[in-house]
Length: 390
Image (cartoon, rainbow, N blue to C red; front, side):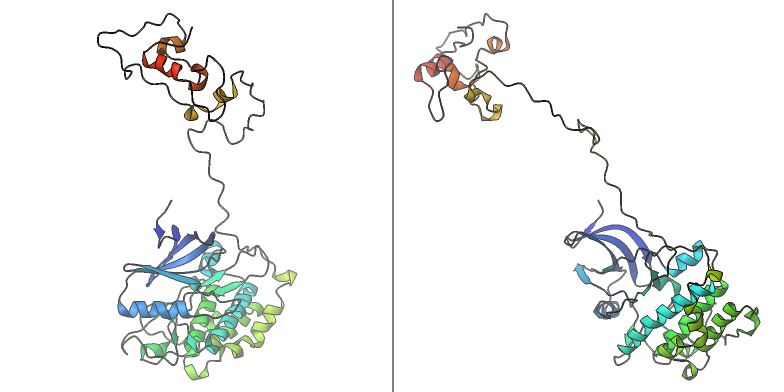
């Protein structure tokens, strides 16, 4: 069993790690469900404020992962969210040679734009669009279902910034050029980052992370294939060097090249063998405990046990019977020796009857419920005389 945080969340295994903290797979003991939990790496004032911002983002959308609850113990804080079992887009690319087919890129881009449209409508800039933050539901070989996550550095457009002008927040390589020059967060920054992600899914090349990026030229990448060049048209529109020329999420989603590929998802000519599997399958039942006398696959005993011929009072479990006094604790006259048993049975060797006190003190007759044994039998025991064999 792993560590239990706040008496409720059992930490099972880490899923991913980032700049703000580590994401764990946890078991919610109260709800009995598996969830994902993000635990802060450090707890300074700015980090706690970003944490409060992230867990307060409540965007009800099918392509957005919404935080559920949070808990804190001492200097550690975590919040939980639904566990998306299909992994991330980065893992899907890694399993299939680093690139994805155009129809997959088009559908994933369309669903990410739907999520960004809801986020920007709520007045929030995500600021960390990258393949690792695009999660997938396990849909097999069917149409994928993407969910946007990690609002750790997201910022509302009407709230003050938590960083200095010279500080750049985000993942290097996906940050637009105007952010390096101190521009305020804007929804166009998320559109630029998505264009870089689309280009990475198409070419398999990660963007350079060495300072302000240069303008992206897609002309040398064109091959003459209609589907391939249609994705490059979307990239060219999203990664315009001037932020004012970039379209909004709704405008880019309506791009003819993108909509044409999304509509051809069921086209047999674009078929492929890509599959989104469940990366967290149901755990097998635990093995039987070591030391158990009956294996788990053996049925229970059904043969009836033989009935005892003892009186009803003697059929009680031994813990309910009155134990006989020890032969060494009986009061005897000074110099008297205990009587030596003559029988070889267990009851004769111990000096006392193996039956309960009510039968021993009434000549083998049951005393009945609630009846106290006779005084004569107790005096015989006090003198150290065995009752067995009489």
